[in-house]
Length: 378
Image (cartoon, rainbow, N blue to C red; front, top):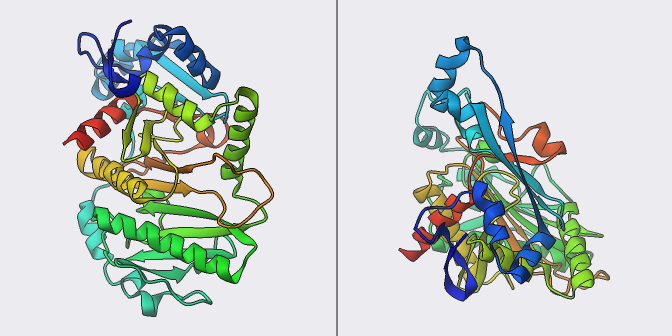
């Protein structure tokens, strides 16, 4: 299968005739790669495809056609299963999952619900939130508070000066991250054993936020990094010991080889092939620098204003900020961004499959990278 070359060996998410690729094409695309690229890909990801078949009774035909468009659309369904063999993350892709019936309540527009929540404690953080024992960190567009119900002993909140969490700018995003990291450094000064920072932003209740007002959180752990970050470190270290290469470099290379990656100001961005949930983007940088902060903004800007995402999670995984015994050499900063769906949808997006088996995803990574690339080229 022919491909169209992209910068530095990447390929666009279209074939030689300009037709868009789909996740269902991935096995054929990988098979057509040069031997070295195919072997590199297959050393990280396993792809398996299958067809699910069903025979609905006549009484269901109208219902199926109403939700899924046709009987043929559900009679044979192509399922793509992708597993990251290094981290053991995995996902099933089936676009039909996005069309299944859900219960959605929209008594008011989302903007109205956000506006109605004005006046809460985060709107007046000096009065409505506690401060940490070292006081507060004040940024250009945010201020910290101590988390009332803490994740960890050091658990802070970055309260935005903008109530609406979807009303952000490049400068605001940069400030939220800078303020969170300044909080972590200050906590580390008081507690030298607390060395493992983690930044997270849950936007709106669908993503796990208990308060509408814009805010992020930052935690600083002792003894070892948080379990999933430590798992990633060990997986990457094992890969380096087995191959002599960087896992993160190779992860980018395999995504680029099939047209699912781009680079922006030193930050590598991938439409991840083993996402936790919908539209997951993986961003990798050497440090939390201006390039990474700008890339996070551009991804979120594309999601919210380009793809109509209104609830999302952002996580930034970083190496420790103090000396430790374990090997963190070559471990970059890794940011992950994903869509959590319509806040007015009563059907949850994560259930037993995501918790105990593999993620089930309806969004196509090729459409995600296409949207990101188009947005960033404007």
